[in-house]
Amino acid sequence: MDKGAIAAGAPATAAAGAALLARGGNAVDAAVGAAFASFVAEATIVNIGGSGIGLVVDRAENRHVTYDFFSDMPSGTMHAAADFRAVVIDFGTEQQPFHIGRASVAVPGAVAGLCAMAEAHGTLPLSQLLEPAIELADKGAPLSSGQTYAYQILQPIYRDTPELAALYLPRDRQLTEGELMRFPALGRSLRRLALEGPDLFYRGDLAQAIICDQVQHGGLLMAEDLDAYQVHACPPIEIEYRDHTILLPPPASSGGALIAFALKLLVGWNPGTMAHNSLPHLRLLTEVMRLTNVARSHWDSIGDEQDGVARFLDDEHVKPFARRLTDIMAGAAPPFNPPESEGPNDTTHISVVDGQGNLASITTSAGENAGFVVGDTGICLNNMLGESDLHPNGFHNLAPGRRLSTMMTPTIVMRGGEPVLAVGSGGSSRIRSAILQVLSNMIDFQLPIEIAINSPRIHYEAQRLQAEGGIAAPVTADLERLGYQVNRWPGSNMYFGGAHAVAYVNGHPVPAGDARRGGSVALV
Image (cartoon, rainbow, N blue to C red; front, side, top):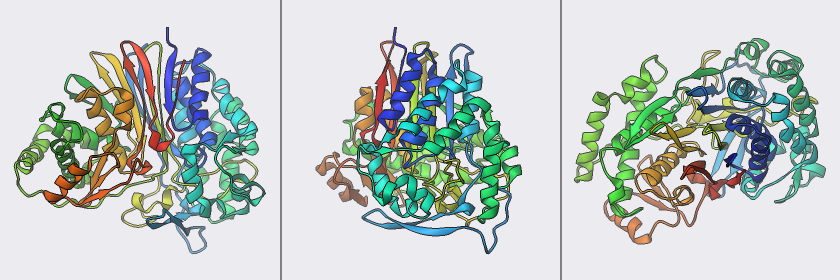
């Protein structure tokens, strides 16, 4: 019998999860262990001082649970001596400022969230779950092809302090693909975490090191912020799409409600009768995305209210948008599409299923990196407070303790009570469009998971349709003749997300990694 399968953002991450499955661990064991391993294997885009969202289907307990371990706003007040500074990242086609430093650090949730998931659903002790990460930190993880691009463009951050440069540019030399990145000090901290548990990070010696560094160097994070941090475990959003049940995370994820809204618009049509990525198909997807973006202004005003999700997804709220979709497809003028707040682009995802039908889907991010190392702990932290897209009303304006909003949307699909799919994606605002298209590709078009993941995608926002390479030129030309502003991409690109997934096919798990973001898989 298959023990399970994993899809993740780097070969070493996938191998870590597979090793835990082989040792008898379940889906949550493998996902949690792989997530800790990713803090080394994918250290160019995530770290132990980041945050995330997890979704679990526990078959033994018949439970569907979302774990919200995203970042909170710290208690410190912004002041003139705060360590908060801009660095400019050159993406080739554009330059974008990011803010780093101690005052860019929001309360980290990854350690608390992953340990909470393992304690509630795992079968192996934390010491075993951390073994792959510790080994990678000690011996080194190769810079994978999927990580190389981020590593290259984020050089201004890695060079910002000597301590960080010593990790990411050993002997003051930029690494090349395949070379090992070592984090021995982090390995020592992970060994202590394996023995002492998450209290070490939030109340113990590691917490004291983090706060001491913050106080000495102009940070805003305080001891009470770490001590008071809580993981929110709650039921997922559940909606029916065709004959499938889609499980999505509620707030702090805004992506879950917005994907659910898009599916409620799409369910009134039958994309499967259209040729895949044809003009009618892409028009329909574009207008669903457009109307979901328009509806987002309502979501932003009610999303964190107690009944916000129910009100937003209520049929009476969706119906006017569904009627507008019908009118637009018949030739009516579409509404204005406001620009979006995106959130961190440096995000990774892990999907795992096991032989008992348990599923785990975890998305994590650290922003980029706050640009420093905490003393001799080897710990790097997030720069969530330096992400302008997370703070549309200005930096440092949220109330202390307020949980930030995220587009992260780990997703699970069931059918008749049986597992079908675990999926999630990196990619900021493109998380929503990536997951929407993967779900429709599988359910509406019944495409194999590998093709459903790696087929060319579109993304629509701010009056512009992004068309990935591989979409037929006559189709994009026809879209332009209909009045769409189309930006043609020359090939596949990580801009369109990285949707790593595991599907169940004839009772067997089938993993698929997204080539856009170094997708790697393992089957046990």
